[in-house]
Length: 232
Image 1 (cartoon, helix red, strand yellow):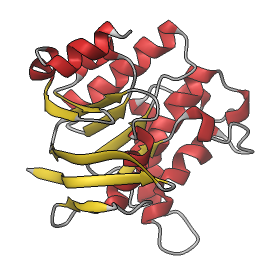
Image 2 (cartoon, one colour):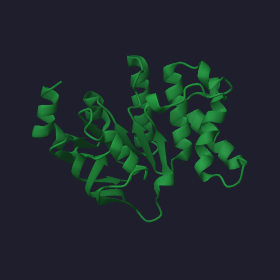
Image 3 (cartoon, one colour):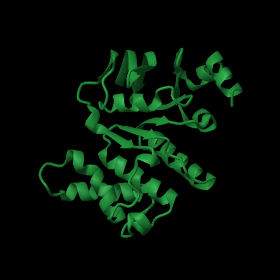
Image 4 (cartoon, helix red, strand yellow):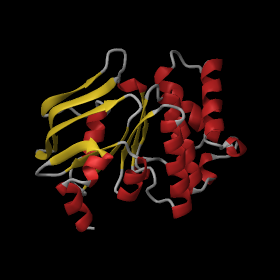
């Protein structure tokens, strides 16, 4: 089932066109990795997928019955307030806000938060202050928070930024489990091609002059992949 379709999209950052003629689809169950040079428009595309930015050309459409409020979003760590004056449980539960009517959380939403905590294996820290956690623990908490918002899609912007190798590997394993075993569609913005090749089903490479969208195997064989790898 096609969830998101991006057709002939051009995006601007201020008055500068950062990417042009983008065409790709995200199907239910996909693991899409978005790669490209710094300044190529990856973060601008993230904002467009979240309906925070309009396309200057083309359009992004969602499947019937699916909308942007059903996307669980994990932003870059540089955009996160790391000193939340809240417990881990409260931070995770806040992911349900988009689906809350009124000022109180329902029992089913508290259960949803607990399920996300169990899934991310952070039950032992759920009463701790978020600000007291390590970087890897914070990312797992924020991923659990994104899960509470997600109905079908997780959108993760540089989810391992600032993490040590062990925490990075753990985060990738968790994301892969969510995709493969829990059938969550995943979109990851990353510079980590090794992880993209290992986990992604599809890759979107954004370039100022051209872009590529296809399966991971198709990307590996493409000239844009070889040029990108050769430049690293």
